[in-house]
Amino acid sequence: MICSPDSDSLPLPAAIPIAFDDNAAVYYSTRLGGSSQGDFCFANMGLRTGDDKAAVRKNRAGLAKVIGCEVTVVKQVHSAKAVHISELAAIKAEAGSEAAESAIEEFEADGIVAGGIGCNAGCNVGCDVGCDGKPDSTESGCALGVFAADCLPVIFSDAGSGIIAACHCGRRGLEKGIIAATVERIKQCGGSVNRLKATLGPGICGKCYEVGQDVAERFESIFPGTGTKTRFGGAGIDIAAAAKASLLDCSIAEENIIDSSSRIKAATAYLAEDEELKRLCLCDGEGPDLKTRLNDMENPMCTLENPLWFSHRRAFLSGKSREGRFLASVAMRTA
Image: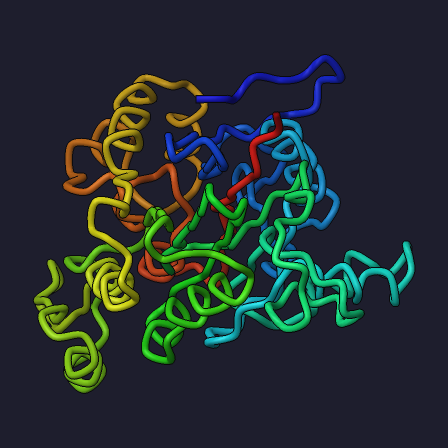
């Protein structure tokens, strides 16, 4: 757990690191350690949520200190579109320094890829057409992130080609094939599914994600075995099971799907007496005190159950119309 203030007293969001591989480090930011207040307490990373933008930027700056570099993000729209970071760099250069941040965050995609084969054909896209066949500089100091508040983050790394990737998997994105699109983009950049590792981040679980019978049946028709009956009594779906099925369909070996749950379970237990988390549970208006929430929790990975995570569904059930976002990030390890 990384969560102490730096020498400039900048609040550092508490982030849970996940052991992944020699190429990449994975971090899940929590609600702890930031500057946001009210519905967004305390470490909201989303600028589109209605939170004070200065507080969000301070939260992101703190996370960048934790990770070691700024995290590149895009506008998530529940699509099957995956983009290479070089495309974003071109947009940033065209927009100019003052407008660069907003230009990047207006780019619509749900998968981001970095690293791999560098293109010398002038297309500046990082593709496999007209490339020299050699890995580029691996864009050291590069980190990619996807926002979540019930949707599922999926992180990738291919140490052999120096590729990292992240994709945002909501129900609609999974149905459209965002995981397959991201894997295909990785392959275009020189990645190999035989080497590719993936891990699933926190997301709403099948027992909590109630969607209605028609939606559940449609999802089940695409991802057999993912229909559920929720704790609320209605039909639901298991997006983590669907994501894993998609990874296997992309020929990613099951042993290369790294489990994030043990680290998250340990971090949650470690924070059971944390004073900031106690305070958060008393002021967020989304449930009882911390001890009661943890006693009732069955799945620490579930964003609705675990108070460490932002959850759109938990906020809605509490009568709130808005909530924050956490970031699931992957950073290239520097030598």
